[in-house]
Image 1 (tube, rainbow, N blue to C red):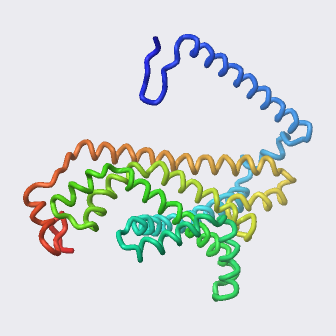
Image 2 (image 1 turned 180 degrees about the vertical axis):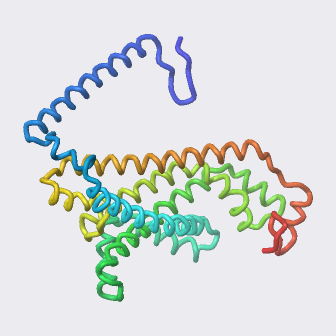
Image 3 (image 1 turned 90 degrees about the vertical axis):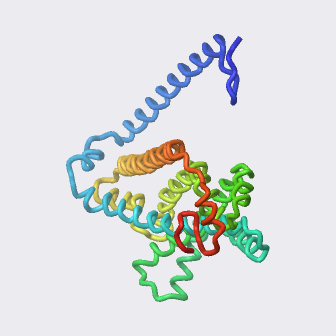
Length: 301
């Protein structure tokens, strides 16, 4: 009899054989598809060395196009992340407020911006900056892209934060109330620190989305980000569109891989820190919590 795990029944002998067979069939089909694609590219002269060699032999393709484009991508994504993360956290906490005058308007804002395509918000932001502000035309695409990314992703992050906090056992809140913690203290010192680890995978996925969505600004608004450099490279290096797109795709893969790797390392550190500290509230801590104007670390409010 096969063993059983929490999530699924462990495969038996026949199931393992079928899995091996499926794997072999998939690999064969994958190799055939790859061969067909390469053959079609060769027929169209897309594998010629002159189309690929500039990315290896000519440093100007990197210093003039790819690296500046990567810099613009990182700038737009970095600004959006720095603004969207705290804003999303505040909105998520606001949706959990006991006060309807806070909870309802915040919920309307989150659902509104979460329902609109991010590209549409970028276009609206670009028009708004053009008509109602003095933002220079060369900076307008960056402002519009960051605005659209912040509005959309802050709303999504708000839902991630809300779901992460609600996923915690209710006993955490009850225990905090039992020792006299106010709701703000419970959120800051009990719920949020525990929810961060649970939210981290979803947050990282959203950060990857932010990095990739910067390409929308290059396609529509003229932001000179990484993907937009494909047009300049193609125009100056002999119509090597496929080669340029392949290299750009590899840069995106490497960038997002670094982001997810860092997030995985951070998640492991957070889990290890929780296991190693074993921190509890002592009698002095409880006294500080119950003292008006004092926080659990003993400092003033």
